[in-house]
Each structure stands twice: as structure tokens, then as C-alpha cells.
Length: 377
Image (cartoon, rainbow, N blue to C red; front, side):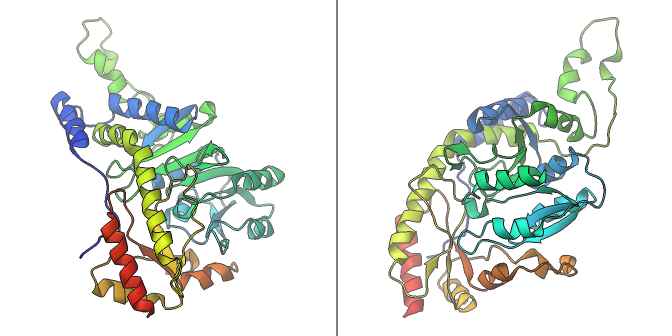
């Protein structure tokens, strides 16, 4: 048996949606993007959303809209994907790496507060693997120190904390629809906020700074009016080519219809995993998975003292694995960062990501469990 690590849940509905876009021959930024933004806002429960090319782009723009002075500091988790920190650099700011909570692998709030100084202007919490950061506590800290909060929801789509959707707790929420995530647009992302005025400039900023995109100008192309300047637009700010397109949005609209089912299917799969590994020595769940709530988990993983040997054993039996993540200060790019992150360095040596996707079968999960038990014997 060969079991891949991730697998998007796509089918004829997405193919039909793409066909519709081909039929109207408008593949770029257009009406489907605006429709997807509206539907996403309704689903998340926020006032406005803006579709972009990736969560990386979303994080870049989310920080840019605050216009922080160059050289100011942004607190980011040490245990996260590179984009959380590179978005800080894109804005000529400096990341400060915060250690992780040993149990949840999310940002440790005590270490966060220890590392705040007068130059810190923002914090980017990441809901690691889909497990929520305690956002009520984090927001209290942010308010105390006057920090802006950009919520990195790359690992969760539709998850909740205390009955409130993740992505709506901070000033701005950023989402990923990359191919491996819960729902996908191939590549893509979304910015959302309950402060419409705050993120309004990002519509132009995602479209090279242009104040009126092509879709909004299209009707003037053939209208018989004396005003011939339908082609006219202005650029009043530095912008980027970060716009979502109709193809991606058409897939996203269909995926959004499936999202509640996707999250439920993954919760059921995690339940089978948890029951199967509960009596295996030296195999413990990666996270404190809460599958009896409206959770949205991206990964399932375990912790073991013999991580590298286990990965080789699983590979030998056709089971894909990964490690999420190498702490960012261990990468050469951030080698000069000396912030203490002892917990991140400790847990990194023990974590393994196992296969999880909506259509994974019970037989596949039980096969993984069987091989885990075989290894531990």
C-alpha cells in the first residue's frame, strides 16, 4: 500500500466550474473573484475579504497596510513556515522569534510577553496544524502593548475558538488555499477583516496599485459614448501583482461548498488515528486534537524519541511523511537570530507528520497504525 501525505478533494464540480470560466473566456481577475470574496466573508463572518495569490501575499499586504516605520519588530513563532517571517522582511521589518508552547506547538504567550520591547509593533500568531492559539489571551496581551494582530490561518479554514471563527479575532486574518491545505484553489489566499476601511487600500495594492481593475472597466470597452477614456486608470501607491484570478476563484467557490464536510471527514480520520495509537509506547499525538468541536485541522502527526528511524520505517512501507517544521532560526537565512527557543528545538527532534486528507480510508489509516505498532515492537 502506498499512501500519500496530502490529497486535495477535487472532482467534477470543480471541472465544471473551470469549464464555465473557459466558456466566458475571462480567466483573470473578474466577477468570480468578487463572488468568492463575498461568499468567504459570509462563511467566516467578517465584513470584507480580498482574494490574493497566496497566504504569503496576504501576510505581506496585511503588514504593509499599517505602514510601520522601517526596522520595527514583529513577533512571530519560531515553529512555522517561512512565509510568516519572510512577510516581515518584505516590509523592511525585523522578526523576533517566539518559542512554542510544548503542548500545542503554537506561539507561547509567556515567551511572547517576555520578548516584547518598545520597538515591537505587531504579532503574527499561527494556528499550528489547525489547533487554535488562545486568541482571547493573545488579544489581551496585544492590547496591553499596543500591538497589531495579523492572524496567520494558513493551517485552518473554518476552525473556531470559543465559538468565533479563526481569522476574525485579530485586526486582519490571512488564509491559504494552497494545494495541500483543507480546501484549495490550486494556489491562492484570502485577506479578511472586520475593519473594511483598514483593508480597503489592499484592493489596489494587490493589483499593481491600480485604482480600477480591468473587470470594472470592461463595460466601457464597447459602450457607445462620447467619453472614450474607458481605458483610463491611475496608480497612486506601490502595488504588487497579487490578485486572485477567475480560474482559482471558480475552484474556491466549489471547495467552499464542501468545506464543512472536508473538516468533518478529517476529524473522523483523526479520531481513528487517536484510538489506534493510544496504547502504543513512544507514540503520542502531535497536538491536543479536539475533534468534538468545530475544529479544522490541517495535519495529523505524532511525537516519538526515534523520529528519523520511524520516518525510514514508514517510507519502507510506502507511507509518506514529513516534519512540520524546522524552527526558522535553524535555517541559514536567520542564523544571526539568537532569541532563545529551547522548547522549539526540543520538540523539533521528535515530530512526524502522517497522512491526512478528507478521502483517506479507514483501511489506509489502520495500515499506518499497524506499521507504527510494528516499529515500536
